[in-house]
Image (cartoon, rainbow, N blue to C red; front, side, top):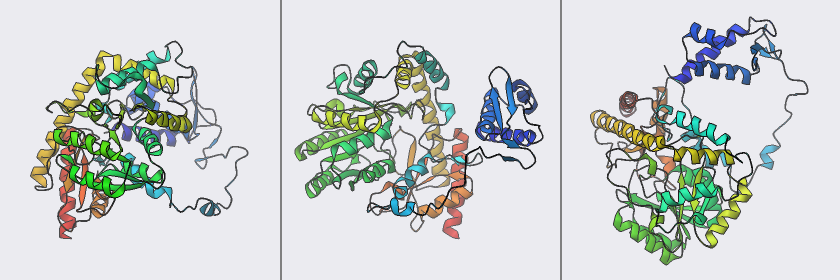
Length: 487
């Protein structure tokens, strides 16, 4: 049973129990609840937090947990706090929120889909965040504890970020003798925030922005939310088609190209050495920036060949604006990333960043410094690479066995596979049917800025609890596809 389902079940049980308690009655101790329900201390703590958030109980440090006075046991309903009232007529907001750009929820829908947490009985082959068992939670807890005790940890940080952390990112991205200096780095609140800052800084509203096709829906959402127009450039097994990239620059006069040269999402492609040089040459000739989203560099598999350097490490002319984040390999909650740029572009990025969010919270920056300096961080990355390799191997074997022909080329890195569906299968219909069968996958349509050339699914093998669960998810997907194609 997953921890999430254990928390839900314990919270439901305690909720029924609290209904029978008089106001102010103390609940059993955490130890007693652990023994009675055979659960971990963390499960008890999280279940109590659920009830506290609902207003059913209150926790008094050093005394225990008590039934809240805001709870009426006869009906199981909470008393409304004094001064609250039912909302009035909200229909006026439809007019106030109207705009020529259309509803924001249409832009965000694919992003919400990638962040959706499935019910406990559903196998997650959708999320881009590794399962919690693959993340360094003990290292993070220790890093946070040490960070909180650092001198000045709760003071306001420099707007660009802590010098030590910016220096670490500069070396990690460009190498010790590379073209990136500490002063070329701007810290951001994670990768998605960095993308937003880059798009709002480098292109004027209404301008075209070249994007890979297919590409991560979050990129398309950021581009559109900034009032920009995404123009797709096809990707093949060697990365973006540079012949078509040159044509797109010439036809659109775009000044920005957004790409993921390493383990591209969703295809997994790695930009070939020949095309790396061509991308930089073409962009420089067009007077354009390349926004390099290096989101998966820390997700390299144990059996992968040596990784190519970031494009930014080979850029001497300030063409590349590089984006790096630690969230995938560390935690979705460690929202610390870095943008690198030089010249007026960096000044523009800095101005946008400070207007949007002032700065990245200093305790998070301090914790990140503690994390990457810990010898356990390198061990964690090696263990993560081994487990991702094992899950990919299991997923690929299951796909060849259950769904031969859907899997094209793939590289040993990242966390996902790009599956081409049989002719006539609707990816949206299949995704909905798969969810009803207990497996959550991602339809391919939102990865395209225009009409997709074929129906695809993206399958993530990082978010499931185990390799065995990945295999079971593929098995369920095969049964659903049989139903869809024969029904």
